[in-house]
Length: 489
Ligand SMILES: *Cc1c(COP(=O)(O)O)cnc(C)c1O
Image (cartoon, rainbow, N blue to C red):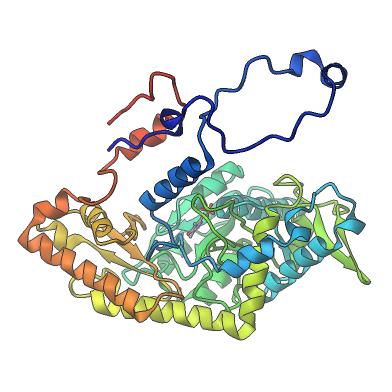
């Protein structure tokens, strides 16, 4: 299917805007703007009317799949509904138009919001200090690991360079450790899908700087031995890092800072309902306990009497990890979500997320293989093994789901599950939506028996069929050329 580009719809002379009348004499312009900055030829832009532009982008948005269009059960990545109240708050003039170089006395409202968000996240996680600066989960990980490294160096412990990471972990964990200049070491999972304590013991030595753990882990399973794990790592002189990208099962129920963790990151774009995946920039705040607090990035937002200010006077800080103070618009959205839910509401969010996941699982298990039978929390992982025996892969079923009007779940992750399907329904989905999704999954499994080619050749109803995503990532071509863009099929 060829989707016409704006350039292809262009007609000379059509306009969607009117510039204000030029009220400066030509010679003043020449005085004001250096010769070399003056444009000689008109910019190459598509020429269309406003109506044509609006229709073009509305049509594109309908070809896309998004959380405002339908159910999006992407495990671990959490595509939860983004409440429109968040957008209204982020559009309040004082937040929207604020400039980071304004003097602090003119930014008091924005600083107060950041300060209070730091405090709210500290309360939710049970930690002592929070930096809002990192722009993503992965950057939060890197920041957190750099903070651990700075602490270890400051306490004079040398030779500590290993970070233990379970084999179920998100790929960003080992990557962050390597970028921080430390060495990732893999720890095996046991048959319950939890950390294998014997393998953990075998890997503990004086070189261990810490452990990075996701809990509930990427199988959606809460590590039952978390106290023992933290104790063992601490005894070896290591620190405990929680990958809290997805905090959806724990709010108001578990405070990670109270169960043995020293540092964690939080994805505002997963747990706290800010948009992601093309919908907006991310935000990955880092929370730490008291002993790691001096190492957090500068500036921190501080409160003195009734005033808020940016505190740069932190000599042990690892420095800055983002321009200015992070992605402020996301702070406003997350703050709105937290305040509107309140403490009880956030607990309810987690309870409903867990309930929805377990309801969906109850409808799907049996038809799909459940590799680890432990009761999951806010998400669960199935295997497509039964269907693969009939010659249909998890990838095929994921594509077929698009024909049923659903986004596919996360697939082929975590790596320890063969033909993995990782499903996270989130807290806001209705019983009807969950049932419709379960019905679609069961229907696809029947198709695997009766008409496997239908599934293997899916999707049939989307604007584009199976794309070569490896090629798209490696040879991304977004530049318009007069002759028309190159097509790779
Ligand atoms: C999403 C995710 C990350 C990375 O977060 P980004 O914002 O995508 O960088 C890390 N760990 C886990 C468990 C995640 O789900």
